[in-house]
Image 1 (tube, rainbow, N blue to C red):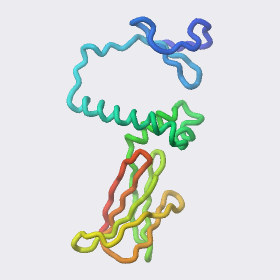
Image 2 (cartoon, rainbow, N blue to C red):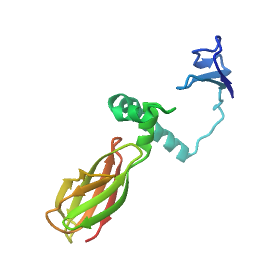
Image 3 (cartoon, rainbow, N blue to C red):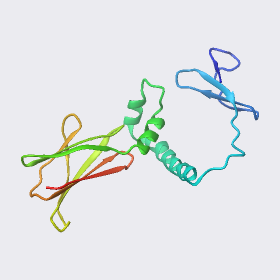
Length: 173
């Protein structure tokens, strides 16, 4: 792979040249030149085909979300990533629920995401598994969310991100 710097002939080139070379223009101004890849004899496994379908869905999400959600552009600023790259990554990485704890009358949830935790929902279940109450947590400090339940029971927490990924964690009482 060749890297081109300040060449009048190559400046601004991107895309395919004939059937041999590919030019890629990077965010920092560099142009990368490489041989066009040949995928004509490649046979994909079922898992690879499934991943290609997931990637198509992620790309469709990222195209729209990169324009719609300014947080993706903010996170990409000053890096080699674009807002599209950040949105694509967000689609593939669901939020993580680190801790669910009860402190007095308050349920505290620590959740994080590679981009942004959009919301935390808390559900309280009785002994038979029926919903006693359900509500949204309130964002606190340092990745902690808080919810004030009216009663007690099994706690089910769901954290969601901007891409629509949901992570679920249960805690018995």
